[in-house]
Image 1 (cartoon, rainbow, N blue to C red):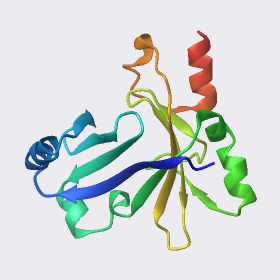
Image 2: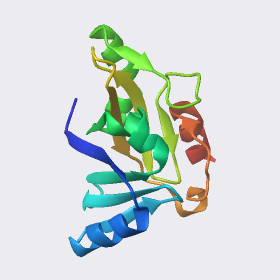
Image 3: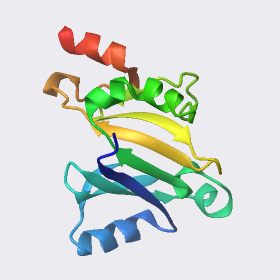
Image 4: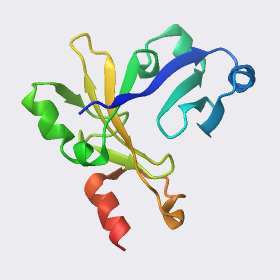
Amino acid sequence: MIKGLYEAHLPVSDLEQSIDFYQKLGLEIAWRNNSSAFFWIVKKESWLGLWEGEEYKTSYHPSLKHIAFTIDYEDMKNALAWLENKRVSIVPFGNRKSIEPFVRPYQGNASVYFEDPDKNSLEFMCYVDVPSHLKDVNDKLSILEWEELLEK
């Protein structure tokens, strides 16, 4: 099921300074917002997430104890059953109530979250091809919602 490392995360004190630093190292920005930036380590395979803010320096945040593993999209559709079969604790992401895998069209990926015995945040992720007319969808969609949207 696991194909490789999808992402790792680091807290930073100055996002702009860190962006400059990682660009000097030859990394390309994959995605960013006001408080975070993601750089391709290997384009379309793995990235590094940088997070700026006091909450990342002074208290626990999932980005500080988080690793995401790459899996295939077809495996993502069966990830809940696979994890449950192994008696792994599946958890919702952020404010979501559902533990179902979901798609982020604006980032071109899908995820499901779970925890190790120490409550470290783990994630299965896969890339999804996003047609140009769906690239601006900012919602997190269930796999079923995503596939229905693709059929339209």
